[in-house]
Amino acid sequence: MSKSLSRRRFLKKSVAAASAIAAPIIVPAEVLGRNGAVPPSERITMGGIGVGNRGSYVLSRFLPNPDVQFVATADLQRTRRERVKAMVDKHYDNSDCVLYRDMYEILGRDDIDAVLITTGDRWHTLASILAAKAGKDIYCEKPCSMTIEESRMLADGIARYGRVYQAGTQRRSIENFQLAAHLAHSGKLGELKEVHANILAPLTHNPWLPAEPEPTVDECDWNRWLGPCPWRPFNSSYVSGGWRGFTDFHGGGILEWGSHTIDLCQYAAGMDDSAPVEFWADDYNFGIYHSEWRTTMAAPKNNVIYGRYSNGVKLVMRDGGWQGLGTCSVKYVGTEGWVETGDSGAIRVAPDSLRSELSVVTMAGTDPSTHVRNFLDCVKSRQLTRANALAAAQTHVAAHAAYVMATLGRPLRFDPTTDSFLDDAEANKMRSRAWREPWHV
Image 1 (cartoon, rainbow, N blue to C red):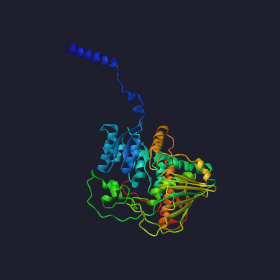
Image 2 (spheres, helix red, strand yellow):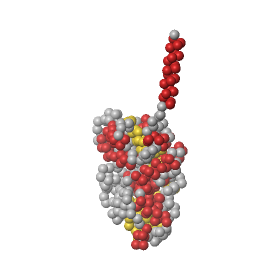
Image 3 (tube, rainbow, N blue to C red):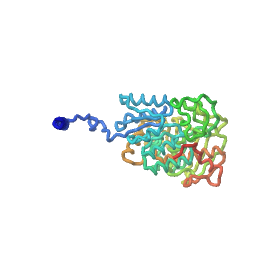
Image 4 (cartoon, rainbow, N blue to C red):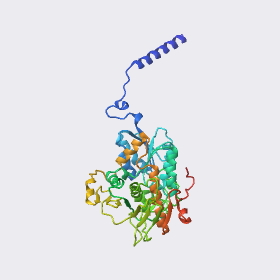
C-alpha cells in the first residue's frame, strides 16, 4: 500500500509539473525590452559611495537613464544615506535601495557593475582604486587626488584593473567648452600661445577646530570619515561640508577649480598626457582658500601662477581679470585670435570674424548630464571616457605641482615623465603624503 501511495503521489506531481510547463508563461514587457524599456540583462547596475549634495545632483542625472538601475548606497553618515535612499526609492516607486554604512559592502556585491563616488577629496583616490580592484567601473567626483603621488596611483590602478573611469570634470562634455577647445585645436586662433585657467586662492591652512562630542558610529563614523588623513578631534563643521580649506582634507583653490579649468587648458593645449615643465609667479604673496566662503584670508593678494609646457604654450592660472562669463572660466590665446568662455555658456572671441564659428549652447557648466551619458556609453563599449583616468591624473599633477610652488614661494622646474621636481629636495618631499593606518591599496 505504501508503495502504491508513493507511486500515486509521484504521478500527481508529474502531471502537475507537465501542466506547468505546458501553460503559457507571462513575461513583463520590460524584461523583453519592449515598449522602450531596457531589459535587465542590458542595464548597468550601480551603487553610490558617499553621495552628498553634489553627489545627489549627479545621481539625479544618472537615474533618468533607462539603462541604469541604482540599487544601493553607502555612507558614513546616517542622514545622508537615508536621504539618498528616499531619492532613489521615489524615482523607482519602490523601497528597494539598500543602505550600507561601509563601502566594502557595495564593493563586495557581484551584481553591481559601477559605482558613483562622491565622498570628500581625501577618499577619492583610495575609494576609486579599491572599486577598480573589486571589478567596478567608476564615476568619481573631483578633485580626484590629494597629491602628485596619488594622481599617478589612480591612473596606474585604473589601467592595471582594466576599468572604465570618468572623472567628474563634466565641462569636457559641455558645448561651449568643447567649442572653445575646437577653436584652439583647429588652428582658427593661429598658433596657440597661452591657455588661461580660472582658479581660487591657492593656499590652505590646517588648524584644529574645537573638539566636540563624537557621535555614535551609526550616526557618523568619524574614524572612517577621516580615512587616510591624520587623526584630529571631531567637529561637526567638518562633516557638514566645512572641511574645505584645511590642508589635511583639501588641495586648495588651484585644485578646487583647476581640476576643471586646468583640465580644459590641458585638453586645449594637447597635453592630456603631460604637465608643465616649469612653474613660477611674479608675486608670491598668495591668498588662503577659506573653507566656508571661498574667499581669501590673506590680503593683499596676487593669485596668478604661471606654467610652461614643453611645447612652449604658457599656462596662466588666475583668480581675477575675467570677463564675467561665469565661474570656471577659461581663455585660449593664439597668434590670430582668442576665445573665452565660462559656466554661463556665453562665449567671446576676437577677431570678429570668429563669431561665425559660434553656436547656441543649451547647458551650463555644472550640469553633468552629457558627461554621465558618455560614462554609461563607455561602460558598454569599454572605450576611454572623455575624462579618463590618465587625463584626470595629469591635470591633477599640474595642479598639485603649482600648489607646491605656491606653498614654497619660489620657481620650480618639473619633469612630467618622472613626476618629480628638478634639483629641489624640499619640493619633492611634498609630492606625497603618508596614509594613516590601516588604509592602503
